[in-house]
Structure formats: structure tokens, C-alpha cells
Image (cartoon, one colour):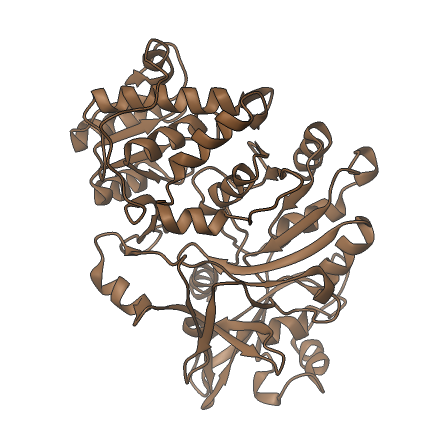
Length: 493
């Protein structure tokens, strides 16, 4: 049997038609409604000539109407290719044109700019939601279409299901191609799932993690709740309202949750707390264990290109603080001579869309080269120590920023810290600590160097200190934008 994403919705609609599949704000879709609306949209798209292999670019904020569209595209074999909703029109047009889409789908907020984009690319424009406005309203067009399964479709599990784009902030964007098979395997949770997964999703619906989390819930015949903005109150309110049993947040968002007054919410339904995508401080994990007794905490390491690579289970969270665990079932891990982490599994991307050079550099003999540096202990547990491209070369020595950040993070005057290399005539590069300091806490470079004594070799100690109000982070995952940070410091100098 082929592993096709559309089959998940056919199966669950037949098994549990009245069970809620997805919610957003006050709106909800049952499995029967999600499958039926997906079928109706599939027929609308087919009438417009959209079928297997073509790409459909979406440019929209998070809204429930995206879920049936996701189903429809999977069933007709078209490729779902969402753009970051926060892109400016010029950026969005550049990435959309690179994708060479057969159609563009937008929402009311982006409709005016999207109309010009569609005209420039000479493709039809569809609009999520009903009523008047630029483009064809998918909701209105689907209301009169048959909700029977679409016919005349031939899809293979190895066909591309989705393309997720890099930000495209510099240079040519990269579109990660994932097949039906890869996405099915990434979200499959085994034969016996006694309790359907009820998850609140913090990720926007242009991000791969949003659909991985959603598919994981749908594979259990469970429920996903989407949010417009992942504030602590919004997340905890949704957990209370929907009786969610799983919550996945990146570390920066978990920090917001721990800073909130959780006593105002009924969180007794929570059973699983997950995190990952960036370094997870041990004190954050301890905070989760203390604040949410009776839950399990898990840490994942992975990427859009590879899916989940390793996992640290609850039993090891306190025993191996700072580790991202061991390879998950079906994943092999090895390191190059330089220490770069490489992964191999059935869940890897097929490559970068229309970019053979980037694909050849990332996928070598079936191994995905992550660009991350790591250390594996004698029990096979992995620690991430930095990025290959971020290694600081100072005085002939190599310094991993993550290692220095971990040492500096324990300084009482530091709220947040990022370490980068800056040009230095004597050392080649200088280790620079960029710090957000706590109010009223004085901080000097000599303080940092004394703090590193006994923790780090002297060549790893910071030689430069910069104090900033906030560290630049990616909107979706909260990861520090080191390149942007270096550019800002260079312009300041």
C-alpha cells in the first residue's frame, strides 16, 4: 500500500466522522467536514487544470480554511508550497516566481498585493474565505461542488507533497521538497495509540513544523488547535479550552509560558511537553518538570530537511541535561572528520527545488549533511556544539559559539547571550559576546572573562562585549540570526 497523505483523511473521516479534527479561534472542523471540504476544493482545483505535480503557492495568515486546502492538494497530487505570511510583496513575489506555480492562493489581508503577483506570473488567483474580493473565493466555489472523492488521480508515494522555503533573506531561497512517503513516516506514531493526541500548535501555517505536528495528531485520529499568535495566554487558554494533552513549544516560547501565571488555567489535561529546534537550557527543562508535575518532557533535534533526527526521552532529561538524545528509530547518525552531524533515514527530503548544486552539497551518498557540529558521548547521546559555518577562527584555534554561550548563560547579570566572531587584526576573529543584561546589573568584559575561568580554555574567552536591547531571532522558531547580528555590529562599528 502506498503511503499517501490524502488517505489519512479518508480513513479518519470513515472511522470518526463526528470527532473534531482542527480548530482555530471559535471555528472547528470535524473529520467528516475536513474530508468533504477537501474533496470539494479538489474538484474546484481540478476544473482549473490543477493536478499532479504542479505547485500551488499560498500566501496567507493562519486560518482554518488552509486545512481543507492542504487536504485537497494532497488528493489531487498538487504540491503545497506556502510562503511566509510576513514577507513583503517584493520578497513574496521573488520566491513565488522561483517556484513557478500553477496558481496562487491568498487571504483577504494579502489579496491586493497577491492580485498583482498573480498578474505578473500569469497564474489564476484563489482566495481563502468567502465574499467579494480579488480572485476566486475557494469557499464560495466549493460550496456547490460534489464532496465525493476526486477521480482520475494517479499519485505515487514518492511524488512531492510539499515544498517549504527558506526565508530567502539573502541570496537565492531554497525550497525543501518532501514526498508523501516522507511526511507520512515523519508523522506516523505506531499501530497502538490508546489516547488520541490533542495538540495546540504554536507554529504558523507556513512552517513545516505546523503540519508535522498536525499530521502527527491526525494520524492518531486526534485534534490540532491552530493559533493566530502563540502568546503564553493564547497557548494555555487553548490547552484549557480544548483539553489538550500535548504541547510542543520552542524554548523561547516555553520561557514565556514559565514566566506567565499558569494558575489561571486548568492544565490538568496535559501529559506531554515537547521542545526542540534550538538549544534547550537545562534550567528550562527543570522549570517544566517543576511547573507541570505528572507530565513527560521530551527534546527533539531535527530540521525541515531531515525531520526528527534524535530525541531525548523524559527519563534522560535530568540525567543528560543539554543533550538532544539518541537517534530516533529508523535514523542513522554519523559525523565527518570536522565533526559535522550527518543523518540518513527514509524521512529525508528529496532535495532542494530546482537547485541541484545545493542538493548535491547537502545530500551525499544518501546522507544529509546538517551543517551542525556535535559531540556524541560514550552512550551514544548527542550534544549540539554549533554550526559549521559559525565556527570562530581565532589565533589559529577553532571556537564553537554554543560552548561559550553555555558558559556565559550562567552569569547572574546576563539575561540572553549570543556569541559570534568579529574581524580582528591580531587574532583573525575575536570571540564577541553580545548580551542582553538584566536591569540594574553592571557588566564589564573583565567580568565575563573571570566568569569563564575554570570553565573554558583562555582562547575561548570573549575579547569583545556588546550590550543590546534584544537579540534578533527568526519569527517562527526563535533561533538567533547570527548573520544579521554580525551585520548590525559591523554597521555600528
